[in-house]
Image 1 (cartoon, one colour):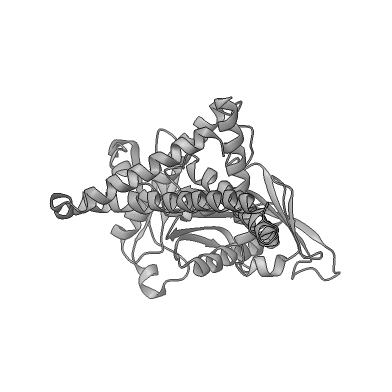
Image 2 (cartoon, one colour):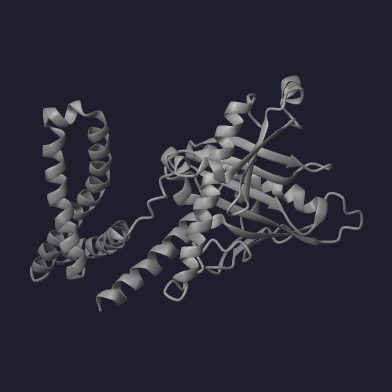
Length: 361
């Protein structure tokens, strides 16, 4: 392992000891906000420090096994230990390097997943419904909570547009690579001659911002409209002007919510979506300025890109950004997204690691 990473890992070990001392102090334990902040940091630091300790142990095991090679009675056992230690060290080194890479501060946040039907008419709307179901099933597997914020259903089922809020551990960090164009190839339910059609949906994943970010928005820059909600929700939702649409006048960005039963809750939720969209616009503008330095398409959030194809006749999913092809489409549509998401995260980590090594060269 390179000297730069070793220096960083020694700092983690030192910081772990420092945090354990701080968390044992009575004055820190009485300040709940500070205690929770330090506890979260300790959890992250301890995860790195424990792997570093294991790495050092396996280095020592490897050195000991190499010394035993010269003993004929121990040579066979030594070779087994060398093989085992070498393999584990390679795995630990990769894990540690990824853990030391800069983290996106938004990764731990809840996220809004916006799905919009594109080319393909009714089939596109049906596919939007399939994608929503896929993400909600994946969220259920992860123990996350989902809440439909707004929806516009199509006549034959599915959605012209739907926004779902997902809350849980590292939601945005897992789903942020889903932004982009999703293309489906299959025989639609409405097709009588068995022909394969191609249609598409667009997905945008937005990190939910803190309430403090929403407060920063000048109220005079907002136009708030209320209207009578439509769709599911029972009699109440159709009898009052509970739905809310908020427009950010300087940017023209719009957010609406009609899923809640009260105008107050819908306004609060719409403001969260609006804040997330404004934040994403600023993020995209910053990314565009840095595009020359950031060559990877992963994480660019360019929603005009066709990032993925779902080919039902072949049972194939292809992610075009990393040339990943999996022949397990039906299980993926049931929410088994781990292989896809982990491959994208690993690709991003490799790109970051390459950039870091180049900067240190």
